Amino acid sequence: MKVRIDYYRRIFPAYFSGRKSHLTFWHGTPLVNENFKVGKIGEYYMPFIYKANYNGHYDNKGIPMLDYHGKVGLQYNPIAIAQYGLGNYNLFKRTGDRGRYKKFIKAADWLVGNLEVNHNGIYVWNHHFDWEYRGILKKPWYSALSQGQGISLLVRAYIETKDEDYLNCAKRAFVSLEKEVNEGGVKYTDENSYVWFEEAIVNPPTHILNGFIWASWGVYDFYLLTKEKNVKDLFDQAIVTLKANLNKFDIGFWSLYDLSGKTFKRIASPFYHSLHIVQLKVMHRLTGKEFFRKYAEKWEGYQKKRLNRNLALLCKAVTKILHY
Image: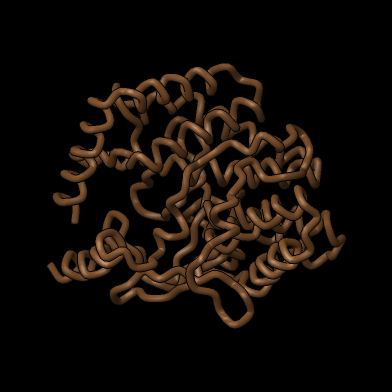
């Protein structure tokens, strides 16, 4: 009961008060970055422009901080910092604006300075606050999503500067994507030998879709930089996993956020359903596989129907109430 009360104390100001919150950073319109080039490290695969222009809290060094309200309060989130850096990198590449370049580098420097060793000796970016997800993720917790997007940012910082600190940090962080969860990493190999990157390290694993795909792009970027066969093999395994399991995220009128296996499935919010569509369009371009394009179009079709949208919102509300 106390967890539920704390949860509502935190989300009500975020959702209903109109005050700035962590949602100020996360909830924009997901888009494919039409400027990205397949097989070449350049602009990131999504624009993240609204994240680059984040109008919330910053620390005295210009690093964005998210306000979660309630007991969580103002926090550094390594995922948000990586995305902020990638958005500013995109704008720098488009405009040559040195101010954007400095913001991009500041974010990369924060990642270098805050890579930590976990209990298994694996380098990770920790979240130093508790978080509600199928219970409580106790601080410090780490995520395949932060590992993948942190690597994507550091790869670009290394290419722009040739500073070995960025490359070395990316190499250390990449180990987590090769190591199984029970070894302190963020990879989970299921009973069918499918490889997943876990956004939330919980037991049993839940395979959050957006985090898995974003993490796989970090693997792809690291391969483009290193050209190492084991890195390419890991990305190829992620493609196989996604292709074989995507149907499990399809409930006939909408997509699921994860595969948590609960009685009440965790349906994607309108934002995350849109994000899934964008991510599948990017995967189509990266891999050339028509399967991903067809699924993106199928889920866009769901999105266009008012009945589907209303049913998805109803299911989402019921799940929130019953879970929390």
